[in-house]
Each structure stands twice: as C-alpha cells, then as structure tokens.
Image (spheres, rainbow, N blue to C red):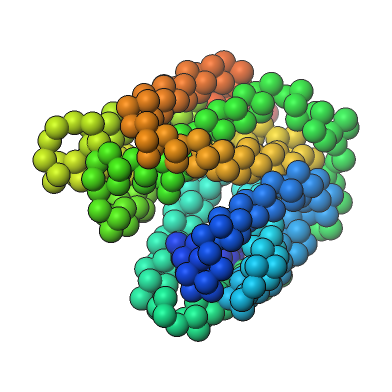
Length: 420
C-alpha cells in the first residue's frame, strides 16, 4: 500500500508541473492559437471518455498492474510528445496519449488500493491517496511556476520531461508491487456471471451513486476553472491573480483538514456525510453570490470568493474517504475495475459538461448561475439521503462491521471455554 500511495503521489506531482500551463503553452508558447489550444484540451478530455469504457474490463481480466503499466507508458509518451510538439497534429496526438493514459491510471490505482485493503482500512486508504495527490499537485504546480518562462519554450520542455519521468517512476514502483488480490498470484477471483455494463446498470445503488457523482463533480470540479472563475472576474471583480490564491486556499484546506475530517467521517453514515457536503456547498454558493451580487467592498468580495473555494475544499476532504470506498464496497469482487472505471467515466463526463454549461453562465448570467448551483448543491443532499435507503448498514457505515468483529473476538473465547 505504501508503494502504491507513493507512486500515486509522484504521478500527481508530475501532473502539477504542466496542468496549469497547458492552454498557455499551446496557444502562446507554440503560437498555435486559442482555437488549437481549446481543441487540445477537448481531445485530452475526449480521449479519456473513449478509453474508460474498456479499461474496467481489462483491469478485471488482466489485473490492475499491467493496465497501469501500459497507461503510465502512454502518458509518459504523451507528456514528452507535448513538450516537443510544434505543430497542430503533434499537439493533438500527444494530448490524446496523455489524456488516455492519465484517465486509465485512476481506476487502476483505485483497484490496487481495493485489493490491498479491507472495508475497515479502505476509508483511510482512499483519504490518504486524495491527500497525497493534492499535495503532489500543489507542490508540482508551485515548483513548475518557478521554472516556467513563456519566452523560453525550453522551460516547458523541462516541465513536460519531468512529468514524463514521474509517470515512468510510477511504472517502476508498480513493477515492484505484488498484489495480494492478483489473479496471477491466487487464481481465485471468480469471473463475473452476467457481468459487464448490463450487470452494472442493473445495480440500482450503483446507478444512483453514479447520478450523485455526476452532480457532485458537475457542481464543484466542473466549475473551478471555468464558470466560477468567469463569475469571479466578471461579477465580483476578482483579479486573475486572486484565482490562484483561491485555488491555494482550496488545496490548503484539503491538506490541513483531511485527517481531522477523517475521524469524523469514519464514525458517520456515508450517505449523511455526502448529504452534509451538499449543505456545505450550498453555503459556499450563497457566499459566492454575495461576492458577486452583494454591495460590499472589494476586499469583502475577495474574501468571500476565497472562502467559497475553501468551503469547497472542506467538502472535498469529506468526500475523499466516502465516495471512492463506497464504489469499491458496492462492486462484486470480479467487477471492481469495471465499477471504478464506470465512476471515473461519470466524473470525466461531468468535467466535460461542467465548463461548457457553467462557463457562459458564470460570465454573463450571474444571478441565474448562482441559483442554478445552489439548487444543484441541495440536490446533492437529496440524492445522498435517497441513496442511503438502498445501502446496507455496513455499506453505509463500515465501522459497524469493525465493531461487530471486535465483539465476536471478545466473546468467542468465553463461549469456547463454556462449551469445554
């Protein structure tokens, strides 16, 4: 588990070097224009949508390790190609490789974490992954910002080379991992009977979780760098540099609050934790509304806007040990990869639709934009409580299983003694 977490963190560290600068690099540094830059970002997202429906079955049939190795190599080639790209075909092709590789990494890593954990440790394992990935992204972005120079294309080649190297490091670490749940090692994982998309769509709790996941990602991550940023600059008069401060506040809250929140989350029902996130994000959107539509000073508007991102970070810290472990606990043993990939596909769809809807609204329809996402946040609470009715007590609150195990362990010797 420690090796998996280290590889995951280092790959996020590599991504942090380039993610904030991809648009600027294509449009300005390579002088390929805004249209090409937008196309590159679209291809990056579309590549993920293309490969994710097939990656889950490959993970379940071959195991997550070989799939992750292929994904890391593809992403590394894409990153290096992007650093060398000086034409539209080269940039688009590299974006396709990079998008496909990084998309498949997530369900493969999630499946590895599932195979190396049990329900009692899974919550903390996914929280650790989320914490380390955000820390890696933040540190990578911070260092990358010090190295990048728009007037020197070579500085961007350095960033993309570091990213490519980190993907190879991930592949090297994964090669040293012997998975305890691997079919190659045990040969005991049963094939899914009637598995595939039909079985997943017939699982009502998983379908409801996917709907809930789409709303979660659409109302939060899908707005960070599009609708909410446009709303902040247009309605609230936020300086572009303040957007960086807001994102830093978001990351800081996640890093600081993650394990404090974890202690609270581990003792609560997952459905109610997600419902609480919906209420927290409702407050965040109301505060964002004050920042842009209120009549306070510019300083107050800026503070309110930064607070919005901070509250989103608190919600994210509550979701990380909740949603991903729930996907794993709902999945049949032989379909863990397919369930993880399906949820990753839902997330990618939300991240693609979110900016397309939120960007124009945030820039021009300020009041309706806030009202829309206040309603979406309240919808999260409603959907979470509804999902809770379809979960078993242990799926909703894994700590109940741990308590039961401790009670059995404590009383079993006494019963055996009495029987003797």
